[in-house]
Length: 404
Image 1 (cartoon, rainbow, N blue to C red):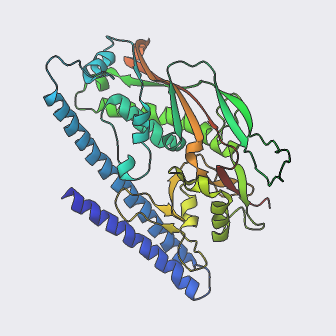
Image 2: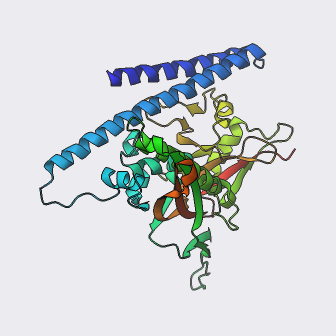
């Protein structure tokens, strides 16, 4: 039944996109721009596509949570009596923490757990939401900090500076005559110390909420803390300057295409095709090659056609499959600049060339004393991390709007 419903939702999503295309195609056939009424109709169809995306994602998440729980129960039932109990903050530990019997919990996700949260195909984890509290917290963090979910993630136990070689140019060969000296051509490197910048948030919850068994307190705290910390970290992983904060992927990327003038920073279909081919084939063939842009930018992308009158953007045909732009998956990140003069509004390339460092997992602590007078318990969530584009030879490039 659920599968049938999801298929119907996906069919509705595809129909909404067909309606949006019909509006654009009718105006194109008549050689005119969209009227105000047609523009409003297109925006409504576009909003329908986005709303159905969210409903499908929610159903896929719920289905995966059920599958994870069933798998966990099978593991418990088949576990030998003398087998050690699973670690990673079980429910009893969390309840003891919330009651104030312990003061801190630390969640240390593995690299595999972070990859499970990658927004790719369902098979590679696009529908995965872990069931543990730590997993839920990381799920919210990674969903907010999109870059962290699709980059290469390094987990370290301690936060001392970690030197990372950054490639700035590659060796080049040349035709050499017989007996001639071979010209030396070394790759150029620089080094960058990945630090451990701290991102934190404090949350207060009334004791009534903690003691009310009808409230999903785990989900509430995970959502609040994960989104808050993820928003702060994610903004710098996208566009951080690298000075007293992470160097964002946009900061490390080079400009592949600059848009035309007198168009307020907008891009054309040809601009995006040129941006695609500004990244050389080895990077385009990477399994983590893709696009990143602000969600609002997708509305403009969905209107674009190539020289054969085919839309560049194609919706995922199966529930959970990513939408594609020129054959590569599209990710949205609210921290990428909107379309504007000189704005770097579209990112494309090997997103795995960006390295995110996470130190010691997520630290979660509580105090019943801080807000004693108001009978509230104060929680704080802390994560330490950094990031940099490790290959700056052209693995990732951006579209920059025209300057005027």
